[in-house]
Image 1 (cartoon, rainbow, N blue to C red):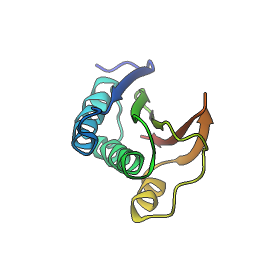
Image 2 (cartoon, helix red, strand yellow):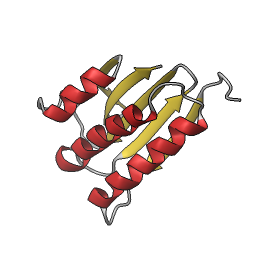
Image 3 (cartoon, rainbow, N blue to C red):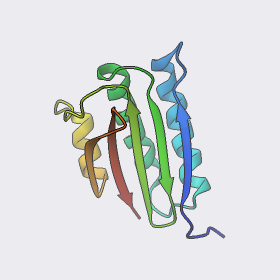
Image 4 (cartoon, rainbow, N blue to C red):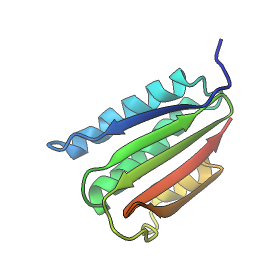
Length: 122
């Protein structure tokens, strides 16, 4: 039986194979959604992680890190990279998908790093 407590999981993409790291991030997202007992669609979490991580690899800078905070009713996905400015990413089909799957999403800056986030609800 899943609990309603909030859990956190963190995944750093490998420095030597960031594109291959996106596939690892998808696996990480699937396990994190299951581990936190999220009652929504786990594949939605996987798709959001895929899109945000791909954007960080292709358009961000530095070393991307995926944070997933979750419980039974909601999951918050954050993908952090070393970009100094939190400018909104260019519109894309992937971000349109994120907007459809998520309750809300956005871009912010934390400690000089760009954070693109999406909240999903069950």
